[in-house]
Length: 207
Image (cartoon, rainbow, N blue to C red):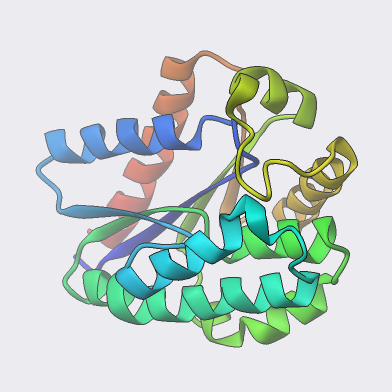
């Protein structure tokens, strides 16, 4: 079986991390090899870029600087972590990928989808096979996260996250074959069942 690339998307507080962990447990029970990774990050150089991006002391960072740093981190991550794992036939569970850049920088920062996709041309050649987008409003996110808002992006205002959510909706409507939208406010176990069902359907296609 060839490797399968699965990404998990949504604003912070939507439950991505929990669902990645539950998906990993599901794959482990099926004795399937997988790796869990994240963006920005996933390998040493990309994690260093992550530190710069999320540092609350870097509030003066310009939108295009931010977008280019995400793109640079992604290239390193692809070559060092994601693509080698896929070549080995593993399943890659990735917390965020290019959709996040398009939603956050393209819509949230108002740079536009064209600009984001242009600087991420390499990533466009290696898009996930399957993506889960967990719908969660900015207000619901704030309630779930409580006082956790500490990094640079988490300190953005509600209008920013409204634009990010609108971006995700536009992306999901454009790529319905790859992206499955899930109500993040539903029961955790029921969400996990949906995720696992879609993963199993994808696995069956590769058999």
